[in-house]
Image (cartoon, rainbow, N blue to C red; front, side, top):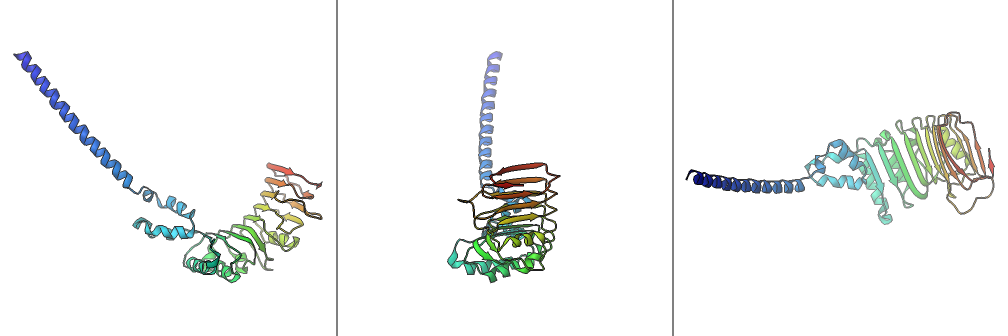
Length: 296
């Protein structure tokens, strides 16, 4: 009897234990399912630190940045801390109105460090002047302007921005710089298919950049320069691309480079017929891919 009772007791114990285990694991499965549902519904992006969120916002268009303010309370005022703004308009019929609105928007920002503009031939010089001459623009560290092959006269105030370190000009016709211009803090300059009035315009632009360290030049048939003279003692990095086009232009055309502090030099040139390089005693890295008639 004792052994039989013991067996019955043991059987009951295991039965109850198994039922308890099933209940426990059943509840656990339900809890895990509920937790997974919460995780799926949870806004994980909003839990990221402000610094990372601001980097994400800086990669959006200005319109997209402002739109994020309706996402949640977390985003309502976060966009106001963004210091990078982009303007890219592909609606020419509404161009004057949208540029005007963007100018008002920028004027209300306390600080603008990076401004990127993709403009169309419908742009008005007066609107661009208003945009670039706003008080917040004085805090600019980087400015990029893409103009789609239209003439642009940069306002004189641009050449006196005390903190401008990077200037990128692309597909625009640059009117001569003002006589008293001085880009004292500019360290990086990109001239990408920029049209100049003459060879002297290039020399004049580079001469007002006493601290220039990085220069990138992309020439095209639109550039309108015969001899692209680069005489910059402080230059440490130079990149030249003159490989786009169908045929070589007539007359003497090419580059004259005098940059004794140069450490990194890259050139890809299929259309110049004259290249003259000065001494580069500090050069540590170079890539030269040229087809040229005269090479000094």
